Length: 338
Image (cartoon, rainbow, N blue to C red; front, side):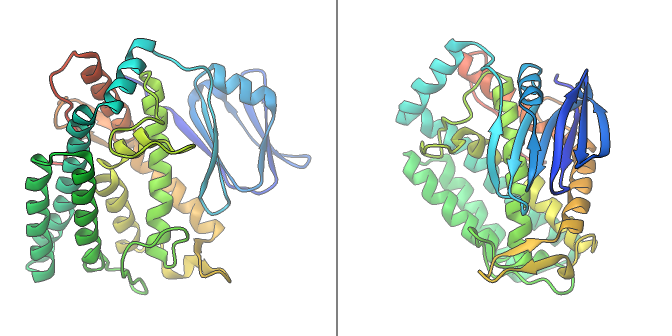
């Protein structure tokens, strides 16, 4: 199993990263901000006006250290990665299956079923911990119905429709899960998010997506060719497919923890003239620290029955998907919280 290495988050504006022997040096002007051994890092995430020397990019590409660039407010921009790893026969199988409607449907159905089941688990957990709530009970019942429909869907388009209905149902009651004062949620809004909860959700989804990209590349799959999400230039469709398993179970629960424990508060956001709501710099640093801590927390994988950090879940699922495509397993087993 892959070792979970540290991720370096660079949020200081005008920072410059370069290589010094086997270390990564961070500078701002002539001031040295830090120096880290490169082999202890699995990824570098740069937010805003951060530059990286070409030699460091080449070194990271050769040594499997991913570099991703985001805007100052967390919107993904670009990614640097080295040569493709893995078996070309595996990728050929992936492309053939992606072009086959029946094969795509079977895998897409599993991604969506896992997403719905994990979303329902979030609602049922709330009911167990905080008592009866008719809105949540009704939504959980509707998600159970969506789950049954997903199991018998006859096309990828039907799977997409079921996924859309289930997401709409889930987010229609998401405000019932919020206990932090000053927060309100009226539904999922993207590009740009117009309230703090949507800003948090979009930011965390973007981070977990990059974890999925790294995991898929690590097992030799092409993260840009998916089964549920259609091909689109520049879109990591298979990574977005894999993300579906982790939206509720990882990202949404993390956002709820941040808000309900008041680790992030309504004053940590700023509204721009365009109406977009963004995290302020100090709050973003705090969030990234908590996110890194969350990745280190361990759980027992429900299928593999192994103890592993949450940060390795995308790698374990990518490995299971690769095994299925190679024909080593009869079915792909998505990550479902028990």
